[in-house]
Length: 576
Image (tube, rainbow, N blue to C red):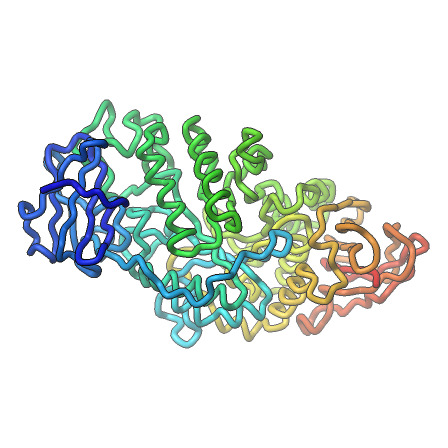
């Protein structure tokens, strides 16, 4: 049968049929079979393309959206393979499904808020359950039902953990079998689009985790897909030297092959163009750039994303605080907007978790607060930090009683720093109502805690609104500048000044007490004279009845000021 002259990879519907195309340079033959031809492996043989003989294609009239299909590849073992570009699958080991390419978007004008405005909320779809049915696994539609709550909390971006199709229905998502297919148990492609569309209508962007540092390790169709292999094996999609291919999580794709880079590039573009995601967070970029071709691939894709979808944010999980990750491609950088900051999270967690006040290092906290504004993502909890040997912050503070006074006071102190330091703050699901323990794919959210700790939820809500300058008197928290101007390592108190342009309603001072001792008149030199108004006091007993309600009133600086501050407390002040 003749090759196709229509564009696109995988299964691309057209009026009256579907174009099928696959990259398989060493295949002896390729056929497509499915429900449209009674699974005949001889009815529709693909043809090598004349101008690109490593590709095979065919137009199949009568095939259509919803049909299941597979490729039958001569020379491969096994020969039946799910399309690497399949947009939908019955399950990770099942069949491809020809997916819809159109969606009736309701909100076509949303753009992700400026990075200075962003507050991110990380979600794992499978464990983000419906409060009315807490024992049923979550889905995209479950998250849609909670968008009002999240908007009221104040966040304006949701970061969804990896959602490409994975083996079984229970996973954190970082074992992708099919990177183009959306996990079927979450609802599939249009349920994801519905989530994006509805979130955008709520003023909330959707950022998606993508996994390009490895594929698999199970159920991937890519392994020796056309029968070819060299040395240690792997085939055309992978490095065939084990030392280069192996990662702790799965097999590293061959970034040196243009077709593999195109495959990853096509996937990144599909999420943000066809599926509407407002940004991508790349998993383990430190593993990608171990290979020189990986750095080049990140540059190529980020440069194209910047042209095609300039509003979409590009985040790296590099965990090395390397400035070259966030430098522009034209400078030789990787071209990401921001990166997860290992320095910040590890330092701050250590400071709030340490059992003894003497073990809290205020100089280390000062160094962690200092940093380039908005090119780093700041948090005390993420899906990585609350597993793999660590737990939720309240649990790590007090494993016997994660709801204890100490756990509540010090975990919220850490959150106050993360939400006021220069950077893009992020919360992990349930953090705002003191979720505890270790996070796993079976660890459903404990929604009753939202009511039990309603005051703590209010504390997070108040912090987020100050961070976003809802009341127009904390504009400096969105500014570029920080000066940690007071560090008292003996008494475990520090203070820092945030500002954009300076002056009334812009200058903000955060005073943080990391010790179990309060002060009625702790004196610090303020950055400018005049009256400073207390905008937030984490010791207020409205947040929890057993908080000390240590008096922290407005102060006059001339230029020193006497601040009232409770134990393990953050106080935020600004000028009119």
